[in-house]
Image (cartoon, rainbow, N blue to C red):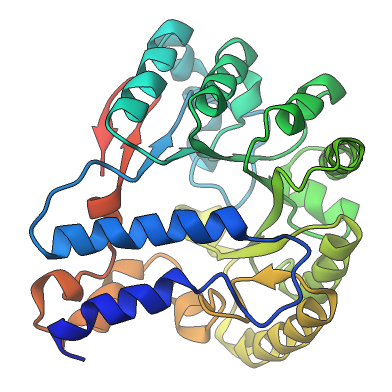
Length: 337
């Protein structure tokens, strides 16, 4: 690969969502969004600075679950307490949304390492403002705190994409991983209520994603998770390999001797996903469950360095282009890349 090929590669990447799967979701707007992302990267490559394409936001640090695999597991209670002391006001967040629009940000992504709707007096005015200004809205949720009126509102404002975290097809296993009895029942209920209102309004939106953190307790359940995603009319199944932050996550790491079994499980799940027309990131382009990625767990930095160590093409050699396209605004107003 030489540098003059960069534009050609970017154009090909822009069409990645149009995969050979029979989709339930049209992907029309996602295609436009992806093309804009690529255009901005090309601008940076050619020396023309542009504003951030995407704003990742953390409205607060509160969560009602203490998931075993989560980065916040060890400091769960502390984070819930500290969050209340430093959270920005509703007025300030509305101002930030307006400023994001002024600098031509396209995507407003509400991250899910917490549970966004828990602080409802901030969350709902913010998502309404995002759509009022015509931005593309994404949010991630554990799905346990919603009521019907709130889910109906997502459809009414044409919120673009929602990620529900469901970590097993088995209620008991999901509840074990989230450390909350009844959490499986609640998230499934939320998804079904959302689907009901999408049918009533004859709307594709929000696009429905299901997120799964794959670990040694649930990897054998992946084919059944695909079946559940089909029953819940999911458009996309996002799998995330376990990251090790503490001893509890180390105990969830898939063992070396289980890797061959994981490969067979992923192959089976892949065939089911194709059969049901569910796009995903474990069997199409991203391949988030490849052995090297799963084994890396807490060692992603060395893996990224390995990927680029033989390249010497400056911008193209970057292991990740997010710093040129995204900024993150934390609950206290601090900004990172």
